[in-house]
Image 1 (cartoon, rainbow, N blue to C red):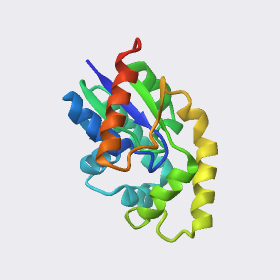
Image 2 (cartoon, rainbow, N blue to C red):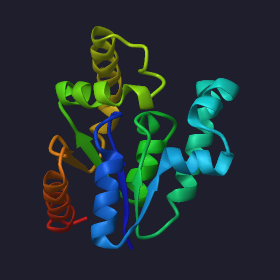
Image 3 (cartoon, rainbow, N blue to C red):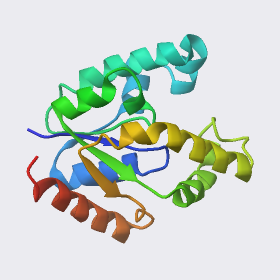
Length: 178
């Protein structure tokens, strides 16, 4: 039985690597944000607008505990998921946590390209985006560092890099005692 939680900042590659890794290993893939949206029949932005951050985080926690019961699954968590309630200790107790570590400059490059798909970033200037990334990382890093494994996820720009990262992640998870 495998239960792998991928954590890290927005743009770190949780969904990209999670999908590829789960496919290569014959595991189910769940993006927690998509799961929340499907169960609540609302977008994350709608939930934030209606319930506020506290209300959204309570829903997110409940959904995390729900998917945390699934077996043979790779779960890509939202960037803030590990930072609230008992989420990080919970994930460490029921599965294997992997922090996808990416340099802020790489995050900036990825998020600048994806700004239109991410409403929270759409109107930010380059300087504001850099400040947002650096500020959030400084707040979230203490939670991310509680992951059992740390994985450099900077090489996810091409199919070849993704395939190589899948192999490296598999080695990390399977060549060490879990």
